[in-house]
Structure formats: C-alpha cells, structure tokens
Image (cartoon, rainbow, N blue to C red; front, side, top):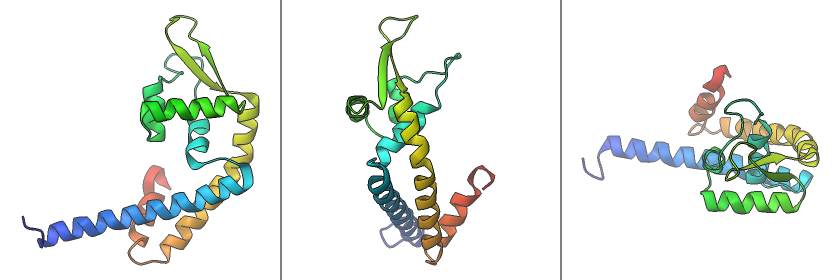
Length: 151
C-alpha cells in the first residue's frame, strides 16, 4: 500500500471525520457543563462511572478500571479523583477485606451535582449530534452513534 492508496485515503478520511465529531461533541458538552455546573467533561465522566459502583461482588472498580472508563492514565485519574475529593464530591476509604485496597465513592454532594448536571450533559450531547448530523461527512457517524445500544 502506498500513501495514495484509495483504501488508506478512505481510512484517513474516516478517522479525520471521527476525530472531528468527537472534538465537536466534547467541546459542546464541556462548555455546557462548565457554565452550568462548574464541571469538566472528565469530572462528569468520573462521577458518572463511580456512581454506578455497588457493594456487591465486582461492584467496586480498581483505579485502572476507572482510568480505562474515563480514558485517562492512572496518574491523571488519581489527580482527578484528588481534585474531586478536595471539592467534597468524592470520598476514599480502605477496602474492608483488603487493607491495601482503596475505594472511591461519590458523596451525597457529588451525587446531587451529578443528577443536576445529567440533563445538561444529555441536552448538550443531543445538540452536538443534531448539529453534526447536518454535515454530510459526519452524518453516517452520527447514525452509527445512535445505533449503538439500540439507539
């Protein structure tokens, strides 16, 4: 394959369109969350992921799992957890069965903020996708996003 190979060009164009769609969505959601709730997209995502934990088997996530879920390195995730803990939105405690393990849970304040921010996040996401759907190069990707999970 050469750099002018049509398959490579199509792949590169597809990747560029996907990157553009992601950037537009993230920027729209970021502006809305910051303006309405003083939260970044990453902070919202972390609160959302951690709010889904439960006390049953496999219910608490390890920091690597959390990092994977919010698409950050473990060190960046730890810094993010610390910032949200400093704001009173998260709390850490020792695992009752393994004193080396540390759990991170969303506080009542964090859950309240998350519930207040969820409609803002969802509306900004819908707006970003609707805007993107009007662009021929992005419309197929918007349809693919809508089709995930039976959308």
